[in-house]
Image (cartoon, rainbow, N blue to C red; front, side, top):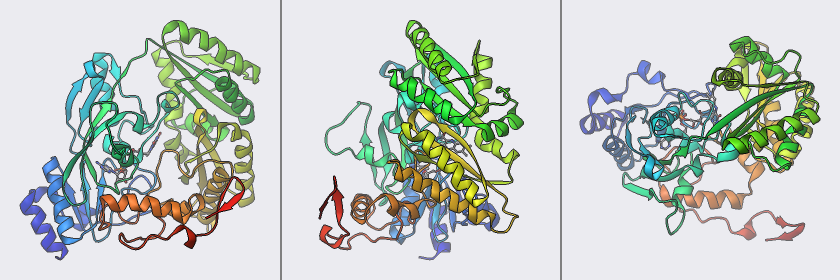
Length: 484
Ligand SMILES: Cc1cc2nc3c(=O)[nH]c(=O)nc-3n(C[C@H](O)[C@H](O)[C@H](O)COP(=O)(O)OP(=O)(O)OC[C@H]3O[C@@H](n4cnc5c(N)ncnc54)[C@H](O)[C@@H]3O)c2cc1C
């Protein structure tokens, strides 16, 4: 079936105004938050119900047409990049809160609900939704599920996967299946766990059951300024080693402070080489005791100024600097790459030094903003696309940063996903056997390879091909011994 016939089928099954084929309208959806990848989809479906998603996916399955789910389009790895011959199924209009059940500590929401809306709806009941990506004012819960998104407070509370207990999913053949439920765990294989973080490659979530977390009795936030990232890193390690688990420990280096300052005037201490934002929450007595300990560790690591937020306005101002950091970098550089990698916390000082060396070797600057508590780095590689060769050098630095993460026992992504952007780096972290095994999971859900093809996996793979046997692969080493 050609695209025109498919569009006609979709218009008949859904509604004419929800099916876009006009090139100008399609352009709106040509990229996500990673704007240097652009593809215009053949058709866009603006879903308003689960039935719309089912109708769109069934039409794709019948005609072997690839489809890509899109929530708010804030992804930073090109996960929602459309397929040129495919259908982009947009779930952002599915914005209903289906049920708010504080008595069960659960909320059931449609996938297009904005992350922060869940907290806003739960707050009057004394609850909130803990995962808090910096994009929480615009990103959707469906996107959060697909990316297993994190945020500043995931150090203490865990990532999206720890806060989703159930899903309704439209599988790539158009069936609707429940995965998990309201209970904390269900018997059998953890298919819910497989779906969370699968980046739209296993189907489309149409309903999400999330855990609600009780609002803490007390929240205390401090900003500590240091001369260097080494000192701030030492304070972070000392706090965690002392057994204190803050709700968040975020670090920003001098360049990212400069950017945030010029964008939102957050008033961070002048001359800081690094700042830590540390937040503690919980019962008042516990928070007070831990707060004293955190302050002591910052002082011992040579913090030259420690500010404690006196009220919610001051707390918001401290956070505004951190949360605006990505966008703020546009103030100090015309172009930048937002990198996302993970390292063990203890490797922070060494890896930050190496990042600066690699950047200097390539003649570009790197601003560092990160979730220091869990070692999730967000180096922002600055460049000017107008200067010949600078984009390529920035790209080289960005790749070298991922190599550093792998070398130090970390990962090529902490929370932004693999998408289209990092698929090429997957073989640096995983063997062919690993990738083949992941692909078998995908094939179990999507044998025709229709759901978000071209993402996550470095090379196109077909289901049903004989998986390579271990003996066909390069040798695998286990604790120094070679095994097959
Ligand atoms: C300024 C800024 C700050 C950010 N900060 C953070 C941060 O702190 N932490 C973090 O983790 N991320 C962060 N992000 C990245 C991004 O916001 C998250 O990845 C977010 O979860 C994407 O949600 P979305 O609705 O925009 O998804 P989209 O970008 O629309 O899609 C993302 C992926 O999800 C899939 N998808 C979308 N909806 C569904 C669905 N219903 N079912 C199945 N698959 C679906 C898409 O196919 C795609 O693969 C940030 C982005 C920006 C621009």
